[in-house]
Image (cartoon, rainbow, N blue to C red; front, side, top):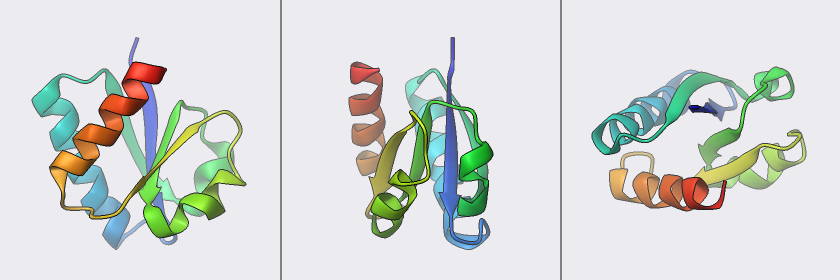
Length: 94
């Protein structure tokens, strides 16, 4: 069964949309069992999923608003290797 991941930033427009595209590319290229969704950080409390992906500078803030979701902070939203490494770590532990 696929894991459900939400990619979110403050406004849900620029950076999180670019990050979502990169995450989807990594998921597809590696056959990861992850379905990727996108929204702003206000939607976090309504998200019923497994994983939250955001930018590193927001990670600690959003951790306070999630239930059981694992939170990944990405430093460079265009670095597919960083995204792959962090998704692999998540998948190995969940």
